[in-house]
Length: 401
Image 1 (cartoon, rainbow, N blue to C red):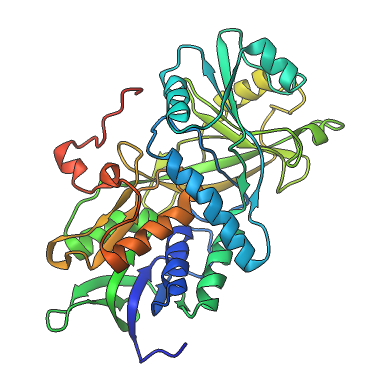
Image 2 (image 1 turned 180 degrees about the vertical axis):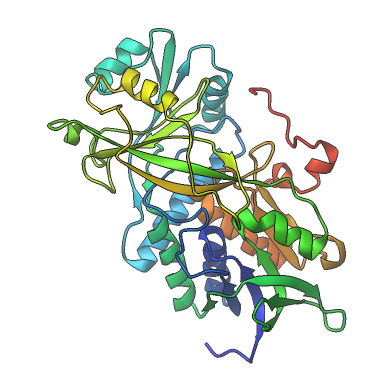
């Protein structure tokens, strides 16, 4: 597909998983698409790199579950187009004290969205997994078939390759310093730090932990999106027990609520190691990262000792990786038009709060819809509006918190 100079139908700023998914969607629909990335493609300085992300339909907020169910289909559709897998099937297990409000909300949300679940007490869970996962007597577990693992760097590469195959132009090491309204013919000018300028009918901003900085520069709006540095930990499975925790068997992806929100995946990327980590981190400036020291290990060690019957070494992680979250006060996304002088010409996707990766195919679809038609088909976006923070600085009110 030939392009006339530096003019495009859609310019996507930020080539992490959300931007790459959006560029794939717009290019696939025949739109002249430019995807810009401030660092190298597939860099490790943001939120889209690494070896595994959980996909699950067990959300306490019932408005995410339909998006997850659509994402399962869109992941598989993209896989069929590229010819390899980035999604690996597993069941999902959520666990918490029996009186935990979040787990109760998860159960209600699943029932509302017709997601089949099984609720198990300690003895039932013990039988289900032959003692590989154990919970205290006053806890319960919720099992569902809607779990699994996504390979993140491979997934970003997949969306970028599909965007390219559909005619998109991809440029990395192109930091964007501004977006300006074209007052003469409409559309916007996207200006890069090296002095290049690109004109687009529409612009989609998906810059992760840099969202607050760029949106303030472009639109003068203060978005309450706080970057956090988080640590992913891998723990050694004791010899002879590795098969019981491996992907492809019956071992699930999992989440544990309570005082500390802990999550993990079956052994996949590193044979003999299982990922178990804390959902959370430390506030940081994405341009001045501390690169450590990481989340406290004591809650993880205690959790592993209590859950895995001594067959996972709780002495300490044998490998760690750093990543960033982009947290909103309510941990809900920001998917909205920038508004102001830009009207509907600039769309923002950000604040994915450490749980967005699984939803990147549907977020890309929604952002493409908003940019191209001014509305998103079949989805309610009221929970993701920018204006909610003006109405309540804490964002959406949630009964289970």
